[in-house]
Image (tube, rainbow, N blue to C red):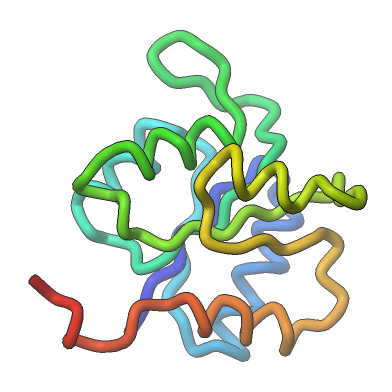
Length: 137
């Protein structure tokens, strides 16, 4: 079973996303806003995809406060986690933001909050999940 790591500082969003992904997507879900934990899960290969909230209010890493863009940059810069698909999730979706966020962070996809179409949400995630076993090195 595939595991999605949800990095989200709003417990309600976390609950909603978890429910959609487990019920509709048949996925395993982990959730945290602790950046050390995110890095650890990613490096240990315990997630197949990360859903990354862009505006993390409380997250810090090595003493500096970081947002989803910064965490995604760190993941993409590390050869060990660079291939892990990251989808940014943000409520601040202005025209042009999407491109900027994707370019800045190196993320693989982008979802706007609130998530209205649950099936589309699951489909977007499924599309980026690594296919089974042929990619394992």
